Amino acid sequence: MTVKQYPFYIKATVILFGIILLVNVLFNLQDILIPLAFAFIFAILLNPVCTLLQKYKMNRILSIIFTLLLAVIVVGGLLYFLSSQVARFSDMLPVLKQRFSFLLNEFQQWLKMYFGLSIQKQIELMNQTASSGKALLGSTLSTAVGTIGIILLLPVYIFLFLYYKNLFLNFFFEIFAEENSKEVSEILNQTKSAIQSFMIGLLLEALIVAVLNSTALMILGVKYAILLGVIGALLNMIPYIGGIIAIALPVLVATVTKDGYYTQLGILIAYLIIQFIDNNILVPRIVSSKVRINAFVSILSVLLGAALWGVPGMFLSIPLVAIIKIIFDKIPDLKPWGKLLGDTVPTRHIGELWNIRRKKRIYK
Image (cartoon, rainbow, N blue to C red; front, side, top):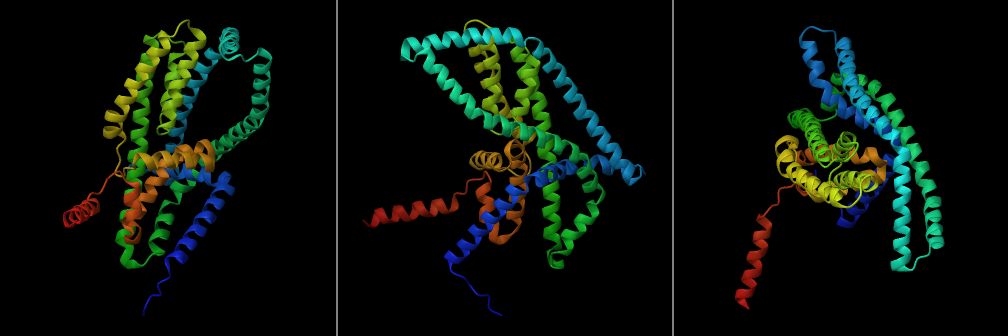
């Protein structure tokens, strides 16, 4: 039986239409899919604990409940620590507001002196910015409400994923032909290992970066050093973009709370050193998983995740791209796409291209 071959433009059109349809579904169903995606990742992360408890003859349901309680205690402790630091920060808000007003007045006078921008014109521009920011505030509030919904649904989804784990695994094996069961098993095992190693490494990296950030800020005498250090470590989980925001926050606080600019310069130097340690020591040795995504795809996936699902999409983008790469690497027709996502730069075809060019120059 011959397989009909379609022209490239027909294949490209069908693929493009499928991508548009998929993006539309992901965007419109984000309130349902975001909690499911987080629950799927955390269920894989918590599965070893649940399996270990079952080896000690604990009931399946009890082991899942105990695992969830342990996770809630850890997350609750972190949230309590952050809330206590935020409470200390809120006590200084009147002083910070006064200092910020003084700096804003100096900045307005500087703009008037060097750019001829009157105070009235500056106020008009600020009012326009504030009015345009109302929509941003509304979207931020809706994002906060959506985050609360995610937090409430996560334990339920994680419990169901862990409880029906064997049912889902059996489904994946049955929808493919029996001769492909080995490849399906390899994909599932690699996906599990990649997510577990990635998430555990990410948490260890965040802990080390939080300690380094907080220590550097305390040495420089920056107020709320621990809070800013922890926030910077959490933002650092967002590849490349989060690191920039993590540097901006302590610089802003130092500008408001301290005179001069030596502290800000010290923060920039300290954070650049920490970023160098993180990118060249921590990430390759701790976060490095079985699936490596190149820098271009990482940045692009974070931006696309933010456009599609907002802040949750930025955190989910890298694990989901890692899963996609595992699937691409196991399907022969999709292996070139898997190589495109990876960080291994091939040289075979590039060498052939250079040989052809060299031969052309010789013959000329």
